[in-house]
Image (cartoon, rainbow, N blue to C red; front, side, top):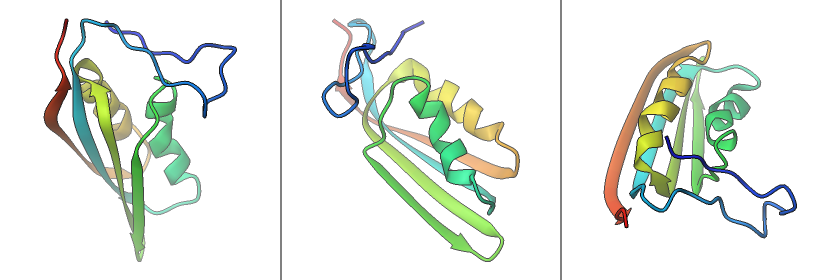
Length: 109
């Protein structure tokens, strides 16, 4: 499995995550529909953060008791897409998770 991490001596704004050179990177978009509650957005971002991934866009909107959050990354290891989607589906109150893979950004070496 591919490992991603930020070096411990690196400020997040100065360093990008490092990936195994052999893993293809793809564009990815996740849409989460869940019961709206305080803390939902931080829980949605957690599966990305724990893998050293920084989303390029985050959009969220509440409609009554339901919130829809969309997280997009321009480049994400292909093998992590289903892992992140699975983690998102385990969040309490989540009704639906859609994961979409886009074009390949970088092929394996």
